[in-house]
Image 1 (spheres, rainbow, N blue to C red):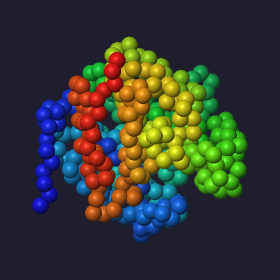
Image 2: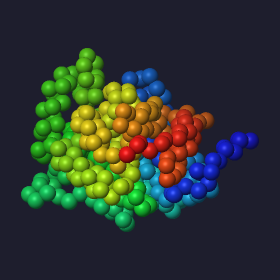
Image 3: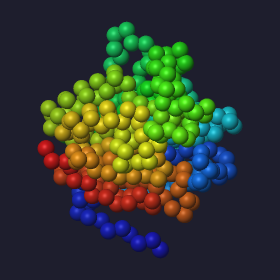
Length: 337
């Protein structure tokens, strides 16, 4: 019989809680290896692990206010078998059982399966949930170049900001769009390999096709949101599919222009944490400004006998992560003003 985890006073009386899960990558296919043929991926079992996470969240002493899904909800192999819609519906049906809002981030596998237009019109566009504030299109901006990012306040003086890690990318962008053309040029300059998903021989291994970057327009918008949060003395958790700190992940998984993004986040005292997925091994680092960089392990490479999700308990002076399976428990103090 499993041992009931110890429950601290913080976990008994948090301000609010929410669940976090990353890289489910469900597909109704047999197990297979990752891109480098070094790790097993459990495509069907990822749905079972999701079901287990939903059951545990439903049984929490304090019900999660929402779930943060950090991207790659279904695997790109679904395209091969023409099962993208069916697989997505199967995963969302499981999430619906919790009857809790789910905030979705878009990763590379979302763009392997669907176009941006399809995603904007789908249930994975959680910017339409009640209480969210989305981006405002700039006058004259090309609709093909708009990004998917929004923020919301789940509790007074706290805010979550979801950003678009594939704003500047060759996947998910219309080949005729300005951002696609610029991204394609940059990728060719940084990665001379015929296979743009290969980092072989690269001095900057993050410049591969399955990554992306944050455009100047989105950085400006992020900066504006954080300026308002600074003035309002809020604490902000930023979340994106791709990590932005080299010490929190394998360098191959970094955002293309991570240094620019990091500089913006570190310049705002309101930012207390950055959550990401993409690197299935997970990672953690607290930077020199006190921002906690949490990279959550991927469900897709989690063995059937284990787990990989967490519950965040938000308190006045700290965040407490109760991890399951591969994800360790952590107590994360907020950065000093």
